Image (tube, rainbow, N blue to C red; front, side, top):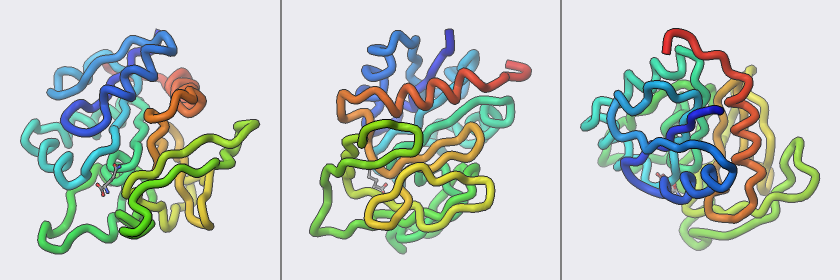
Length: 200
Ligand code: GLN
């Protein structure tokens, strides 16, 4: 039985937890480095990435989360969480300086890329491996502007990548925890099932 964690500093962590529990998975809310022990997968939820990054610093979580990945853990970042995973972040408000990131995933993201007028919207998304479109909720969403060689784009909206995978890392621009459709959480669980943890 895989043990999943949801980073619970800020944002939509409760909804992720509910989705996972509905699938029969044990979920731990992660706030401190010790909470990562024994987990095989971690979700970084949507919210506000600058705030979340600041809290990651306050709770000394950067290094432990990177170590969790090095030990073989799988990570899925949704929306602000995807921004935290990215190697390159564009479009951050300049007054905050360079935005901290886990820099684990070889993607370049642009924050708030769908513009102010369309702050949020829902779109049926064609996802590689899913039979029917996924109802994707976008809220001040980033796009994945470019992907490195080892990254597989899994869905696009208006020509922009909004879901991608790199080994045991997954990033989505949208919020799959805000719809009852469990298929993306199932996709992540399948990814977690394939991981082999070392030294946990
Ligand atoms: N706009 C937010 C950010 O850049 C992300 C929005 C979200 O997670 N729904 O951090």
